[in-house]
Image: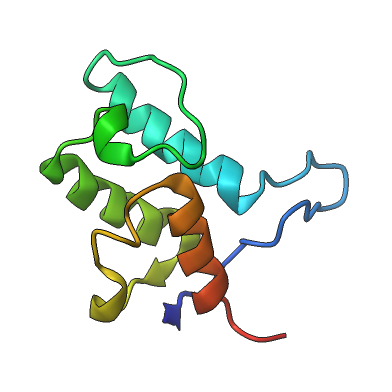
Length: 103
């Protein structure tokens, strides 16, 4: 993973006089919810639900990949762009943890 300059993926991080930064899982859920909303889909889903079954089409997965890269200021390596990694919010979160810089 190539981290970009202002990566803020740590859960619960706060700045002076600011609200807590949402966890990576919450941020991923928001990205998925936003894509679903663009198709007028507002059904609840769990972190382990298959994103395709929730309502994301293949083109939505590409949009999600780009949104994840933008949100987390990373470049997802080609080896991580798989159906298994993009199966659910939980599998995406696991990818982020694998790619997180040590320290």
